[in-house]
Length: 468
Image (tube, rainbow, N blue to C red):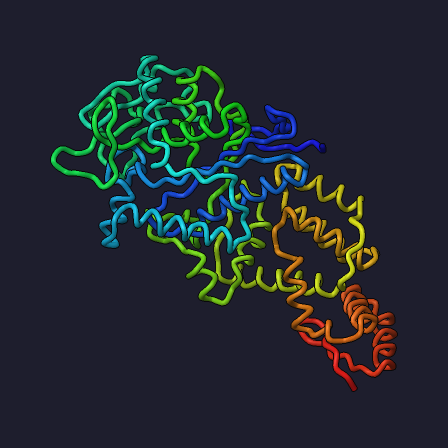
């Protein structure tokens, strides 16, 4: 296996990836809170995680990928106050919290499919893993890391060393959120809820019995309980958005390592934000979010256009959203599909030199912009058409731009398959010669095609053939 270098937020440097178990990777990605549609800022994170997973598999690793689905416990204030987002969604739409969870989980999975994002090995709903969360809290209580307030059971962050080792921020800056009022019962501003009590006299739609009273789990405990249960000793890589570093992932590490006495995950990877014009982060709380439907589908843009656009910006760099940028990406992706279609039907051998360059790019902390440059170089190379096709289809195992299927669509559009194979092959060779600006070869092939009784017409989508 080739060496893979990944940027680890925990150490703030690129490191050679070494899995705990040879040939196997345990990958955990923070999933959606299913109270509303995922916005394309959220989906940029899932794209980066998909590129990571595909890169690992391209390097012959077997990946066990676990994703949680938050269907309870994520409050409107990240500091454990405010309304549960699921209950709020139920009130907003006049449905039950369970119906809201079902609907938006299905919508999320539909979005992933539209973006050609591979499903995880297992989706794990929080509500299906309540006993594991209660058991983990009990373990923390037994070890003396918890205390009780009027609204729940809290984790005492003062009892763990290096609480800020992931965020690298001074503890004084890790304060309660500005969106909600402070909780005067907390011993430390950074303490967080493990279990929240149901309000007296108000029955919640989602609540459970526990040793501490009827209530529901805090947001952070779910990821610890689920990853420890389903990945067990394969805690290799934990991913999420950059907004999870200072609170959610910091708290996951604190409670997990306090409970087990062992290091939690070895590698922590985070995707940067998608910004709207003006440099602001796209967020549901800011009411400025765009979905696949209103940002792409309604504007006759394939969701794969957004995937292609994400390939062009490194995952750790902020990505700027603009309609003009997506339209430009659409033109680039369509050209790529057309180029693939022009390579013909025969699939040859993957070129080892180009594959080596592609591996070097993706294995250097997922450098997809450089990987795209290698892809472009393949098209411009002097490789045989069938070897070019084999090579780009091999690269698409990571890029996920659906080159195999889309090239066939474009071949159908250009009606190449209606003509004899020899003529179709010459038409493909001629298109390639024109892209290489080899006009003499293009003219020669045109004359050969015309001599066989066909006309070639050049269009913005490549060439078409007609019988004389």
